[in-house]
Image (spheres, rainbow, N blue to C red):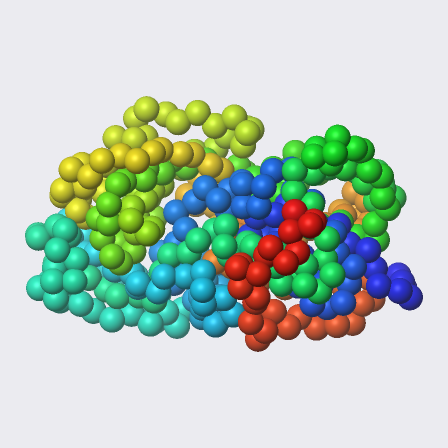
Length: 388
């Protein structure tokens, strides 16, 4: 397929993946429109633990995802430094820790090139006084926290500075096989129809719901999780339980609060997630193993959101935390692409791979440059908010 002028690209979704995709396309010189049915980062991206992963959590069970996380960790800190608190993370070994798993964990981190520093008990308790005094050892990894809204806005601001048009509160209602898209722009209550050369469905756990507008399905597993936000700075590092990934085994400091998370179960509709009462107690039971005084901190709020996991036979926490981009050409809609899986830490890489696939389809031979070029600050967004 050969298109002489700059191709017209539609990106659906303004979470971390969609925002990064819009920026990548704009940096490659394509004409980009992004639409989002809500506000920026109003879906899964804005309702997660905001953890900049080192990949250590996945090193044993999903080494490919672990390697992606540690590489992207370094890139994001370089291209978008204003969005992160680089406070580091501890993996905490308790008396009950499975020593065979600990050994696998240490070996896997080494094989995935994740820097890991042993921290003795006394040193760890000096740095984190609220930790369980019966802990055995901590292992320091290069983790941190981020502001989801500011991260997405940095990508979008940078995209808009290159000519991308960003429309929030604008919902796609129809997708035809020739990529004529109907968009309901709610602020003006107008319905707009426009034909695009390629469309990227980056709607996270809603990716199948969006694909159904084109009469197709994608293998996504919306995996919901509950999180609890506590009042006060319970810890200053990201605290992880040294164990196979499970419910409630991470505590993330976020400004003057901390987020406990998360649980995991499959839902049919990511717009209809009800918080199971027993999940709250699950989170506290695991969190108090790490920080015994955790229940003394007032609850600020509870939330639940869905992760867009790739559907597999295993399901649940056995599902890969990797990602893929599907081109729906075999389903009769050439030029429609759907992004599945992943996480915010790997959003830039997901965008790179997705844009590579789309550019290959369009014969647009411009390489990705997002790993080297620093993003504009989210503080500059007001210069382009006539779109928003």
